[in-house]
Each structure stands twice: as C-alpha cells, then as structure tokens.
Length: 516
Ligand code: ADP
Ligand code: ZN
Image (cartoon, protein in one colour):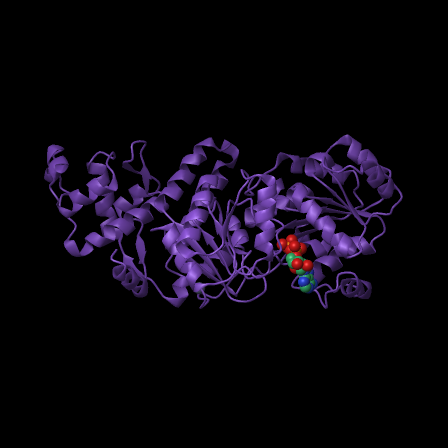
C-alpha cells in the first residue's frame, strides 16, 4: 500500500493535531499527492475531510471542494479555520464574495467550497482559469449516480468542468456505495478503476438489532432504560417526530427533544446544540438530522421505521459509538413500512425504479434474516465477513428458524381463494376454521382452504404474513385487503422455500410476561 511522504505526516501532526492516519486515509492522501485521481469509499466518521484538506495545505494552488449542503460547508470552514487552513465558501449566504475571489486569484486559499449548481456555471470556470487549481474534491460523490440513493443532476455537470482542467487530479468521496453505484461514480467522474480505495466498513462496537414494531414508544423506552447516555431516534415524518418525542419524554422522564425541518430554525439549532452538549439527552429526528454533527458519545440510534436503503441505514446507525465504546442500533420495522415504500415506487422516475426496488428488497432481506446482521451489511458493502459476529441480535440470541414453506403456501392460497380483497384477520379466520358471520355469508367456510391450519401452527400466521408483506409476496390493496405480489406464484408452486425467523425464546418470554 501507498505511504504518504514525510511532509504529510508532519502536517497531520502539526496542523491537524493527530498522531497518525486512520485506516485508508494515508493511502488516499499518498495517491492524491502523487497526482492520481481517486474514489475514496469510507464510512461516515472515518475521516474523509482530512484526505483532501491535508493535500490542500501541501499542494500549490487551491483545492476546490464540491459539497451539496451549505450547512456542512460552513461546519467544514470553521474546523479548517481552527486548524489554521485558509478556506472560504462561495454560497448564496456569503457576503464576502469579492474578497474570496481576490484571495483565490492571489493563490492564498487552500480550500474553496462550492455547491454543485454553482460549480457548473460558466462564470465559475472563468474564475478557476484566473487562478490555480490543485485538486477537485467531490464530496457525497454518490449524488452523481442514478443508482445512488441521492441522485442530483447538477453533479453530472461537474465532469465537463473537471475535464477543462485535465491535469488537475480528482478526489471523489462517499460513504455510501454499492458495487453498481461505485462503478458508476468512477465512470461518471472520469476516475480510473484502479483509483478506487475502499475502507473497511465494520463498526465492531455497534450492536445491530431489528425487531417487529409492536409499540415504538414502549420498545424505545426499554432501549433507553438499558442504554443510558445520548441517543438518536429516527422517525419517518415530522408528525411522528413530534409525537414520539413527547411520548418518550412522558414515559421515561428523560430529556427528549424533537428535530425536523418544520421547526423554527432557532429552535432547531438550539435543540441540536443542546443535544451535542448533553450527556444523556435523546433527540427524535427526521433523517435531516445528523449530517455534519460530530458527537462521538451517541450510545444508541433507533429507527422507528425502516430506512430507505442499506446505505442510509448504515450511515444513520454509524452516528452511534464513534468514540469506540459499545453502542446499539435498533431498527423497528412493520409490514406497512414496506408497503408504503413499494407504493412510492410508482412515483419514481422509471429510469431509477429498478434501483429503488432493489434497495427495498435489500432492506427486507436485512430485517427478515435469522443470520448475522453485520455479515449482511458488510457483504452489501463488498466485504467478505465471517458468518457470525457475536455482537448482533441474531448472533447473541439466535432466533428459532422455521421452515414455513407449507404454511406460506396455505396462506397465499387462502388469500387467492377469498378473492384477494380481505385483510389478514379474515384470512386467518378462514385458515383456522373460525366460521363467523362474515366468513359464512361469503361462503368461505366451504372453501378448500377452510380450517387447514392446525391450532399449533396458528400463532405463526401473523409473523408469516408480516414477513411475506416485507418481502412483497403479499401486497396491500387500496381497501386494506391483501393480494398476491412479487414471488407469490413461485412460493405457491413450491419452487421457493420460506424460512421464518421467530423471535428468540428470551423475547417471547418477555412478551408473555407483558401479557401480549
Ligand atoms: P467523515 O466525513 O468521513 O464522516 P470527518 O471527516 O467528519 O468524517 O471526520 C470524523 C472525525 O474524525 C472528526 O472529528 C475528525 O476530526 C476525526 N479524525 C479525522 N482523521 C483523524 C485521525 N487521523 N486521527 C484522529 N481523528 C481523526
Ligand atoms: Zn452478528
């Protein structure tokens, strides 16, 4: 592997105050200093900024940083200034444009941060021609890819800009890239394939767990009791953020504050500042929260709903335990999360639909699995991890794995034979032989699927229906019924087995003692 020259080690110590490089940082810095274009794939918190900030202080000229969020740029600016690095931003909220432009022309800037929409304007290219560019750093580089989870068309205009400065090396940075997205980024940004440097994604101190969402308030309150210290709870909507924050505060007596884009900016900033300073506060937030926040002692991240992709899940949970101490990531899922995500596929640009669909399938596979969660995550990021990690729910307390293929076939047949318009409750009655008025009125007590599920198997029907909904084999109808979807036909034909991971004995016992 590449080693950085002595002056890089010196800058690391003297300017940044770090005793050594972390992970692949040195490799990236060495390659950048040698003039090679690079895609650095490093998890959140791994220290991506250093890989362009440090070369920026050593190379003659200015490092132009393309970054999608103005708030993030200003955070970066403050930390660069604190390290004695000459940095400036050119954004709509900056008043000192003229000064910045003059400093760039005079070669006084190490770093110049701009948003992609600014970078792609002709005036910006003219500005760059009037000074000296040392390096292009493209932050959140997955935004250039339609396969990525956050495509931004403006990123496509960066290539022509960079091509106009063909001798200037490029450094693209991202935390979140599956194989397809990675290949797309290097191609879109004109980076040679051998310029890809991938950091290890494992966060061994984070304990991963996923559970069915029985009651978000009760389940998260239990986690808070188990895991004192600061925590982040992600909720899908502003309304749910408000509601959860209030109920969690009430239930636990702890300080719990909301954070979402609909709050008054002053309140939002205040809540964030209080969270960062606090040692035991919990913040309930939409996904807008956490970008650019550097709080090392977050003890848990809980998801009150399913994130939109493995990348998003990994990034959000990655905000826990940056200090290396034990931390927990708990995801609560429900069938409706998947139904809603699949429903939204219809509104997605057709070119991106398949990518989105695969992201939902990957999340479904993660939640329904009875095997090591960490292994699933790491395999997703292209690693070859051991089969078990000893620090996730499935490794610590193995779920009971049941072959539910036969039962799934019965359930799907019953949905089909009752006309794909009834909800789970009705289908369950038919299968278990409950002839209530509605069942009799419809003649469903005379169907071949009536009473074919023996009493001992009846309790499996509900978790199985959830599983089939999560994987899309059952889909909701407009009127709250269930219909066949996805691979339902293959399951019915018996060509796909269905394994059901049931909660481990310890959890079943806890549920019983709560009277559920
Ligand atoms: P990323 O952008 O990859 O999420 P950052 O660049 O924000 O990560 O860095 C995360 C944290 O790690 C910051 O607090 C930064 O100061 C710290 N950091 C970066 N490099 C090192 C290093 N070599 N040694 C110690 N701390 C580091
Ligand atoms: Zn594990």
